[in-house]
Length: 326
Ligand code: FRU
Image 1: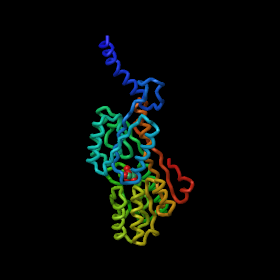
Image 2: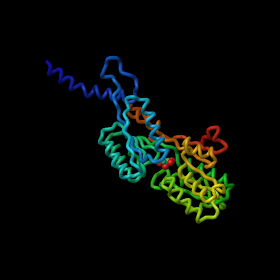
Image 3: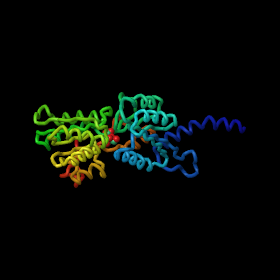
Image 4: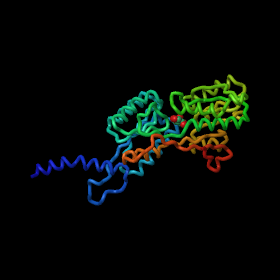
C-alpha cells in the first residue's frame, strides 16, 4: 500500500513541478493558503555584465536588480567580466552549468561571445542579449536602442551646429562591439560630409569606451590640429575625457562636445554644467530585460528585437527633459 502510494507520487511529481514552473515563472501572486505546491517557484536569472567599471553599466545592473526585486520568486546571479571577453565567455559557461532559468548577457564584443551565447541558447536556456549584439540569431531576444538612429541624429546635430562647415574629431567606442560600429556609420550618414565639403573629420581614434583613453587620444588630436570645432565621442565618458584634454590645453571654449548615454548624474549633468553641448539617451534596458525574461518563462510571446527609445539633450531643452527622437 505504502509502496503504491510512493509510486503514484513519484509518477505525479514531475507533472506537478512542471505545472508550478509554468505558472510560477512570472507570477508573483502568493500561493493559495496552505497549498505548498502552488507557492511561486524560484526562478534563477543569470546576468553576465561585460564590466562594471563605467557608470552606465553600474546603472544597468542597478536597473536589473530593482526590477527583479519586484518579483520575490526571482533569484539573480550577477557576474562581472571586468572588460575581458575571455573571462566573460567562461562566466557565461559557468552560469549555464549552474542551471539558470534565463541568461541575460551584455557582451563586451560580438565575435568572441557569439558561440558561447549560442551554445547556451541551443542547450534550451532562453537568452536575453542586452545593448551590444552578437552575430547570427541564436538568442531569444535582443534589447537595445538603435545605434544607427542615434549616430545619425548626432551627425545631423553636428552638421547643423557647425552650419555645414568645420573640423571634427570622432572618438569611437570599441569597434569590435556593435554600438561602436553603428554609432560610427550613423554619424557618417547624418553628417553627410560628401554633400557638405566644408565638413571634415580630421582625427579618428578608438578609445574603447574609456574616459582615460579618450583623454589621451584627444591630446594627440590637439597636438596635431590647430583647429578643432567639434568632438563627437561615442559615449559621455569619452566626450568628458576629450573635454578635460581640451581644457588642459586651454582650448575647450573653441569647440563643441557631443556624447551618448545621458545618465542623469553624468551626461545630463554635463549638459547642464555647459561641459557637453549635446548628449543622446541610451537606455540601459535593465528593467525591460527582467520583464522579457519573465514573459519568456511564462511562455508569452516576446519579439526577437525590442528597440528602446532615445532622446536628445541640449542646453536649450535639458530643463524640460530633452526631446524625443523618432
Ligand atoms: C558602457 C558603454 C556605454 C555605452 C555602451 C555601449 O560600457 O560604453 O557608455 O553607451 O557601453 O555598449
